[in-house]
Length: 70
Image 1 (tube, rainbow, N blue to C red):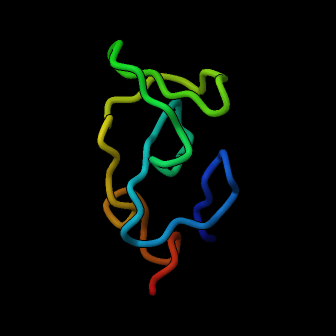
Image 2: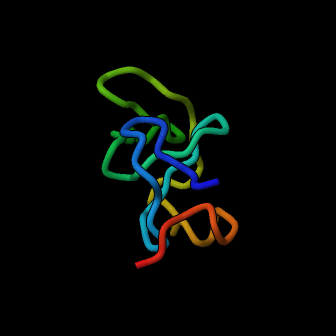
């Protein structure tokens, strides 16, 4: 099953930068990060804390088949 962004519901591509917050995954472009530790927001709603402020490539977080390849 493909993994999808919890904010925009789009499938992750293999090279997307991904933010993990409270066991949910988001495209880096879908969230706003604030350097307080890091707390991620979607549309001014706090979605939780995260440690990966720069995001990680989807292929590093998900198993093959859980993201789209080009």
